[in-house]
Image (cartoon, rainbow, N blue to C red):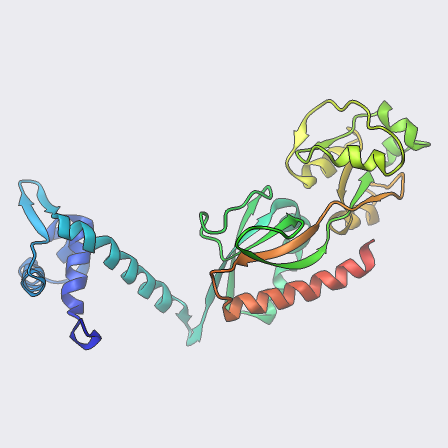
Length: 295
């Protein structure tokens, strides 16, 4: 059917009625009379040559044809509504649904969001934190900041900065660590990435001790436990450098473990929008500036 011939009023009447399955409530939503609504739906049925509803004692029931048509129209009208909602005060606004690994969100992104919003007031970020397990398509995300090697199937990845790990503990705990061989005498805080301690000790030519205790899915939790003198942990240098500067944490040893990088990702199948490009450019520049002086 040619676009100029689309019966938009009738399609809208059917879509609303298909959600309510009640002509009275549908007419109220559209601010029309029930008779006018029924007329629109009958006209659409005649035009299509099908029956879209069956009347039952408690209201309406969609026919097979109605079941096929209703979700298509609902999606289209929702998309139209969403596009129009982006215009406010005479300006176009773009919303970006951004997934972020929680430690990166709290320790790096959140303190800098104000700078991005000042530069790009027409882009609204909706931040969804996670523990680095993310499904862009399944969670309806436009972009995701994640930790790893940058190799994810079907994903375009832009490197942001190093995720190299440093060993940290409280000043009190550091007083008990004169050499690396003293580490097994204190709790070693474990990440869900089980091989990190093994690799850290291997870089020193030592076997890793038997690890016990809780396992954390967040570097922020590990840093907090270490600051409370519970033990020592491995956390990203670029994220927790401020904790060293304010004295909450110290580095008893200088060894750095190359564990991965932080990446901005999006689905290959989703073209980059203007707002997403603006965010990527701002993010990569800010990360490069921080990384240069962190390690």
